[in-house]
Length: 248
Image 1 (tube, rainbow, N blue to C red):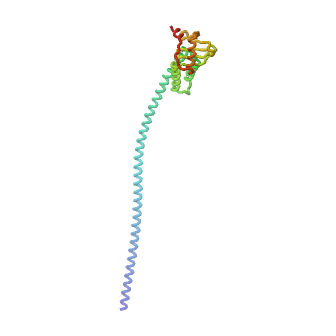
Image 2: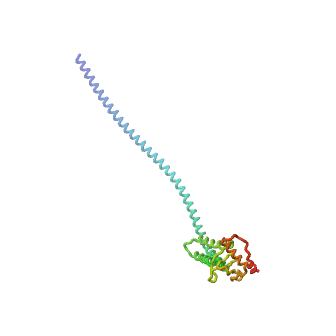
Image 3: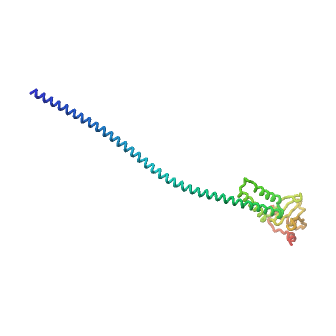
């Protein structure tokens, strides 16, 4: 009986050992399977990351291409606008050059006419006006002054001459090397008065000569007019009958 029991125990032990070996093999298989599954999962995760990275790059590249197309389109518009502007500027340069060619002879004629006016006009402020005309001639030859600025200076000179017709003025100047007080009424009448108030005269626009004045009333009116011009007396009616007499 004891022998049979031992035999059974041996058989059971052998079965247990066999079963344990089987379990160990199963565990090894499971571990290897898990390892492979983990490797496969890592590979899948890696591929997913690569896929996501490629997808992001694709999206970025697509967006960049779209932005580049928009930018290139804008550049084309800017380029076209610049070409049109350049063409316009070139035409303006041509027009300006043509205008300068036309305006230069005009400015010469304007200065010549102004010079003729000064020579033929009543000889008031003769030195100042003659110097102004000469300055205009000098300006025409200056390369550092632009054409439009030359034209502006000439127009200013004409305006000064034009304004003389609307004003009265008293100033000192020389006549035959002697200093006198002069009275200008517009640009139509010019008188002189000696500093000692003894000599009086006027410029005869018809004869182009200076003539003396002996009439006491006319002398008085000239003295009054000089004070008015100097703002030393209120404006008053001036009676200079000798002008009317000379014009008859």
